[in-house]
Image 1 (cartoon, rainbow, N blue to C red):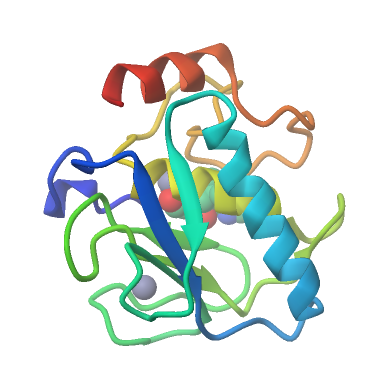
Image 2: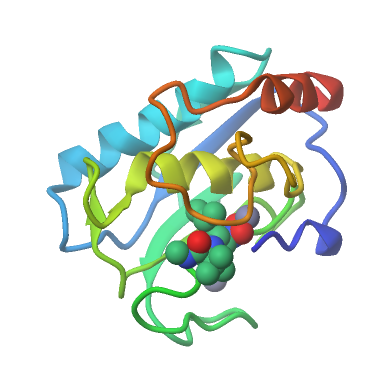
Length: 163
Ligand SMILES: CNC(=O)[C@@H](NC(=O)[C@H](CC(C)C)CN(O)C=O)C(C)(C)C
Ligand SMILES: [Zn+2]
Ligand SMILES: [Zn+2]
């Protein structure tokens, strides 16, 4: 889900920091790091946005894996169902992105692909809403058959309309 209605519409800067807090046990940390880095680069290669990893939990986009109730008003729901959520641009929890660790996170076609889900959540963290276009990365349902080039023309248009 996107909670961008709780935050402002866009960041007032083009360079954002991100931090990865609690990891999942489904994948090696280094794999999680590279999948998330490539999810960010999907957006930076098509826009003027730049993303810098930070060790600080006060980064603009704080990412973590969590289950059930985890400190915000949106507890996760166990296996399947909601896979992740992100808050729209803003201070504090703004931009923060949480992944449900009751899902099977993978780097490939099985389970739920972390790069694909992270790229969708980053879209929300940047201020994008859902799309009704099945080809858009911002479509509200997970589609395992999404091609490797994650972003559709619509996604590229929308991010460049915003930044
Ligand atoms: C398999 N389960 C689904 O397809 C579920 N969809 C999601 O978990 C969305 C994330 C996907 C699109 C990566 C939630 N979302 O919009 C976060 O920003 C349901 C459609 C069941 C809600
Ligand atoms: Zn969403
Ligand atoms: Zn959360």
